[in-house]
Image (cartoon, rainbow, N blue to C red):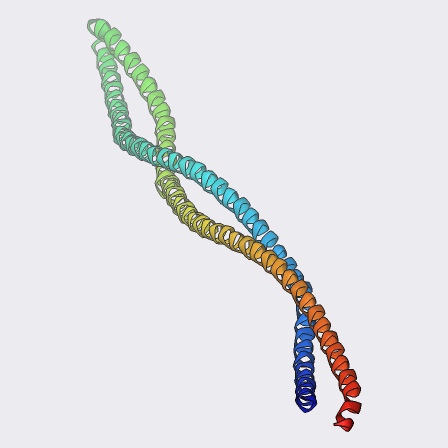
Length: 311
């Protein structure tokens, strides 16, 4: 019987030693896991802080994108206002160009008519020359008549008076015609100068003013087209900004979910760390209990040794 007890105690000691080894190994693994779990919350907290910073950065980016979107909207409104003004200006320029063109055409016709009237002035000059010739011939005829009347004596006195009056009329006519010719020369010179200045003014209006209107019209049209292109650029920029803002908002939401998940993971890790610490403590208790049992068995073996010798 004592042999059986000795055998059982020996097997129990061996099993106890095996249990001690397993407990030691489990304790080592549990300690390592506990150490890792103890370090993990700090890492998770650091990661969580980084994610929170990214979330705040995403919110700031969204705010900046909103500002850019508002600026783009304001720029589009300004461009619309400028485009309306340039369109109105272009319409006025076209109207003024057409009006100026019609007025210049009317003035050109007036100048043409005035140039035609110069011929009448020349006709007056020709008529005064004819009058001067006629008055000269009349004066000569009156002089001859006076000479013939003087030869006739008393019979020619009445004819002499008539001849003298004719000579006076011829002289007066000659003076008047000469004055008209002089004045006509002044008028002719003024008209010729006026015609030349009018032609020069018409050339200036046609070559400069109308061309300037065309140039202004072209520049206003080009500016309007550029404003339209710039508006399209801002609209495209606004669309990209809205997309960027939506992406930032989505990213901020995702980062917030990650933050919540990380905080939950930290809580779970802390709980696991506490569980590991409790497990480590339990393993230590098991080891101490196993050692205590082994000590009891060894003392029991020592107490049974005398009985074994008696047997």
